[in-house]
Length: 241
Ligand SMILES: Nc1ncnc2c1ncn2[C@@H]1O[C@H](COP(=O)(O)OP(=O)(O)OP(=O)(O)O)[C@@H](O)[C@H]1O
Image (cartoon, rainbow, N blue to C red; front, side):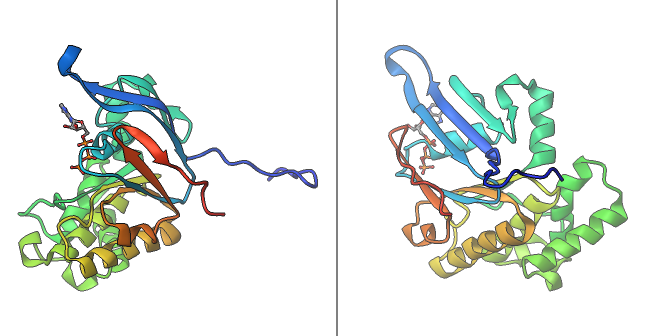
């Protein structure tokens, strides 16, 4: 470790930097300008909530930060890597190795057990079966499902399925988890427990989370709230110290 001169402040680069990002769909008069120049940063180990009415551009922004889509303009960097400089293989590797995804509809494979679902991202990285199974069980315990490892999604409640999805998102020790309305299909109490779980894994796993949500009751669990309105950021308070 290098010695810092007295009085020097260590500035850590953000995990995500979004700079003047634009995304339009279609051209000419019928073009939809979903994002019209969006800039913000997400610090390491921070839980950022992205709020905004339906159609404000939340999913479009999450898809861009998640490397599932490319911006029409602007840049996005993840831990200093410019995503625009990656080809499709590079984006695939980045998604597999450094990102975790949680969706509103859980996205679990119905024929696989909870443990096997959690193992999918590790399979893609060719992690040996024994190691995969051990980590899947550790992660299921972390999300409170130690006793449900062998159950299939159809045998689990919605909240339990979303817990499996969160365990799966953590499988490859991602830098960033992107969650798109993860509580959207859950009742408010279960939704809150899912947000509390995300809050807890941010602390215990040191992961960074960007979560889109409509639910104002869940915002208080975030370190900061970024609001999108008609493709613009309207609220970007400084991160809570
Ligand atoms: N593939 C696409 N083709 C054309 N228009 C699109 C496409 N994807 C999104 N849009 C448009 O971009 C705008 C933003 O959509 P987006 O899905 O990002 O909003 P959102 O805030 O996530 O909404 P919701 O909360 O309903 O999911 C909308 O006007 C939408 O119709």
